[in-house]
Length: 102
Image (cartoon, one colour):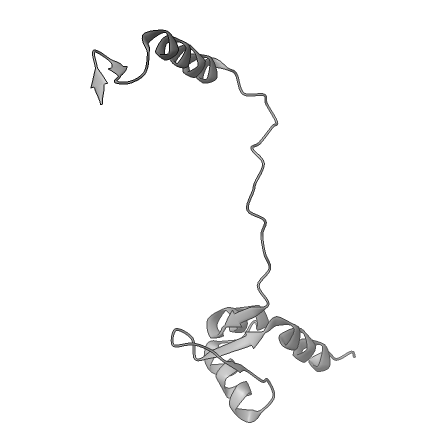
């Protein structure tokens, strides 16, 4: 709660110091070229849903389903949101085995 612009329970001298600190932080110029450090590291996912795996292979989702049904590519049973999950390493292996040279 506030009373006359001052939070109740905060003594006026502490509030003035607090306000001065806030003003100083707002006025501090940002150094060019410095970006805030990203605290969330990017984690590469090993498991992919059907559409992501199909895009990774460069085929349609239907083609990927046909490859699974023919036994060329294996899958991992997923949860209710995605019935099939695909291992990125297995997809990479499938690509490597399909490479040909002229």
